[in-house]
Length: 195
Image (tube, rainbow, N blue to C red; front, side, top):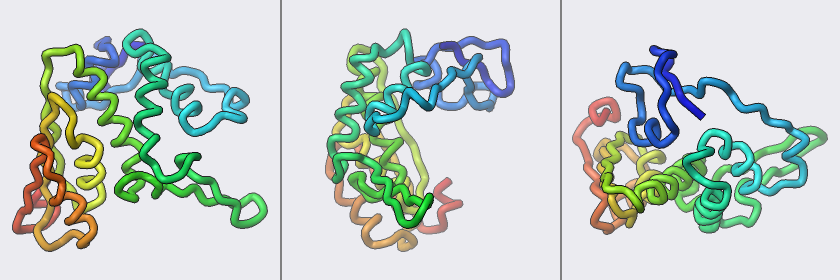
């Protein structure tokens, strides 16, 4: 699959190109040149990891094999505290709640960031590249990013948070990680100052 920028539909970049670039150099967002079709019938009876693999595979194909993606997803969600990863709770007739707090920091952002950390780790292992993740947080994004990237080789993380303006739990989640690749910076000011 090739990707274009929302500001330049003529470019054609691979998944690995956009993974390490983040935003397009022209300031646009990356989108696929053509969207894959998903058949909802194919999702019936699948668990969370199988659905994630089915949905993600077209976007990474030719760069990450099915087996590699399956292993990345297995590693990503094995640390969640429920076997179904995201529990769907029936609260009333045709009313459900999707629980997105089963990750290591109890934030819904664990679902994407745990995957991203393992994806970067996989893609960097046979590369000479080193990356830096720079983020500003009001709490939950920072702790989820730190948890996702701690101990990952070839990745340095710098997270800025407003001093005294995050919850005690989030502060502890961010400031008690001692891995060498993690750098947490408390800024005297607001979240906007961190950004």
